[in-house]
Image (tube, one colour):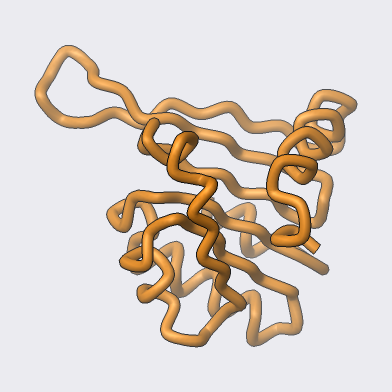
Length: 125
């Protein structure tokens, strides 16, 4: 995720409900992108997630995300052209496992981003 954030030129949107998925490296990468003039937003139904950003990026509390966030995943949209979408799961061990899809500069990415932006509305502008 940090690599995608580092490649951002205009905008980054992160959504997650799990504070452990907004780890120090990701938070630092998003803050650095914001310092370089990228419009960075973090949205979550969890105040614990939003508190990790301590004013370094624009945040929005979106209670309606609880249903999606219940899957324990993350969403990252970069420059309206790249998307990474993950969900949590359980593997063969007791440790949680994160599974993701990623696409950039494709018709698939464009359609998926449009669907998600339609769901999030003004929080992605």
